[in-house]
Amino acid sequence: MTETILGLLRHGQTDWNVAGRLQGTSDIPLNETGIAQALAAANAIDPSEWDVLLSSPLSRASETAKAIAQVHGRHQHVIDDRFLERAFGEAEGWSYEEWKRLHDPAIGVAGGENLEQLEVRAIALLEAMVSEYAGKRVLAVSHGALIRKLVRIASNKQLPREGERFANTSLTKLISRDGEWSVLHYDGHSLSGI
Image (cartoon, rainbow, N blue to C red; front, side):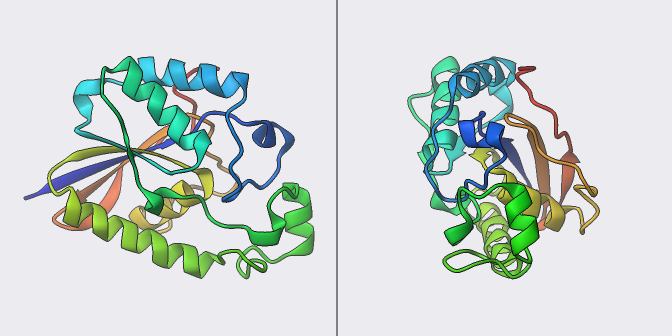
């Protein structure tokens, strides 16, 4: 039986996280707390658990991955566009309250991905991980909406439960056994403690 593990680490905090704004594919950098979270999370991660370090290309994720690489003496992490956040189109920068009031999240907005499109992309990502990294332990630094969708798929829509969110620098692990994904470790709390 071939087992592939995918660790999903949410990036460190940004100013838009604090303000409750949709970031999507807008490249919002880590704030001071986010930088500290990235370093603390890097120190909390056991490097022997992971074979590969991947990251979304957005700076908030790639800087978090860079901190992990530096703390663990890795030369670099691999940028992988498939771990990019859900695109919220013209709603990027809006507050969550505006988003809920003005748009149906299942439909999305101009220039953005609706939930069906996000699910198609997430399924393709999971299939690619099994194909490209069979038998490996992959740590990927990504984003809340994409992580949420990947966990929904792997848990057969049981997780995350209503109202649960993934904190910045939280780590959840999925496992594929011969191509069938399930949740190995579910935790929405920050590894950093910050």
